[in-house]
Length: 210
Image 1 (spheres, rainbow, N blue to C red):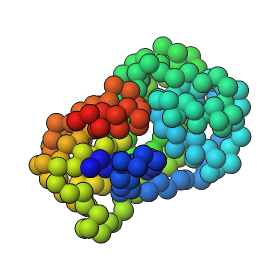
Image 2 (image 1 turned 180 degrees about the horizontal axis):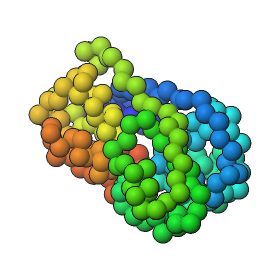
Image 3 (image 1 turned 45 degrees about the vertical axis):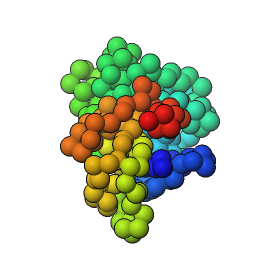
Image 4 (image 1 turned 90 degrees about the vertical axis):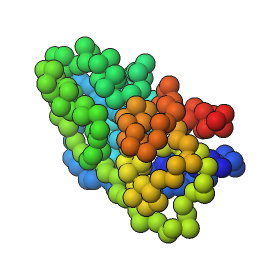
């Protein structure tokens, strides 16, 4: 059985959705017209803008992954550039040359693993960072624990933390990670299969072929 541990649900009838976290959005006030570039590493950043009733403007947007790119376009951004690299630090290295001399806004989660804010600031980027949302760990009933030999797809390090806190880890489990940072958070428990792109569909396809 394949379990998807994510805040994003799958409609695949062969996949069990297991939500171990919930997203809490923070209210903030920002005028996007004061910036040249917006950095998005999750579609939750777009949802945070919606939650705070921020109006989109015509600025350059760099995004990680197809889902984030689509969310940005649906929100009203027209100049959206999806990075070739969908893993945290590699993403930072790729877009860094486009940020120098620009006024940059980065909307992120309260807790991150890749430390992009620090990386950009250390490399001379004029960066404003807003914590737009956070992942809160849920307390789940024991009967929701996946059975032995399950294949479990993780979409963030926080989901790994929340899963292990609720259920521990069974050595018979196999894991698929959406990116390098998520895979690293699984290293104490197992060697995961890493998706080449930050795509939920690719993760699920990998899981089906294990």
